[in-house]
Image: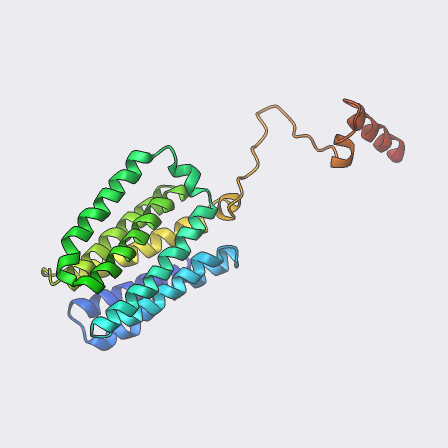
Length: 253
């Protein structure tokens, strides 16, 4: 297992321990590093090819710090940072072809929309008008991210769904709905979502990651046409390739 992945697992365990029973200093030491470590891992594997994903992880770092501070102003700031993260990740998935992937899956999109409407209807009255509207907008961005993440396969799809569940728990806590172990469950699902999304992006085909469809491979037994473009464009059918081959033969002889 790569050292950075081991470091991420250790940080997640420290943060969960701090949330469950440890001193606040333990959480402050671990949580601000949860998103940067996968970002460094992704950068080492792929460079800056996934700049929107890296930017989203940076905004998630700022959101994590803000959400550790008390008060509604800090909660609103954390919401804003994570909204930026969701928009960055959605932009990356759209570049990878998410819109075409979702176009024939209208029922799935409708189910996510219905889930968003139900969650907003439950949380908004308890949050008040201003924060309720902000949470509704963030939740819409989050649902969109979870949907578009499906373009990178099952791992990213599960990452998006787990992120939905984690932030739903955060929203319930902000609305005054809590239960024992809620904070621990929030962090378990959050760290799992970060890991799944980052690994899916790191493992994506280069063409899909860059928003360019990879070139189709040749069928078995068929050789790809390696004729230079300047000969393939000959106005006489077949003459371009033939002239190129004759030139090669004369050169080699």
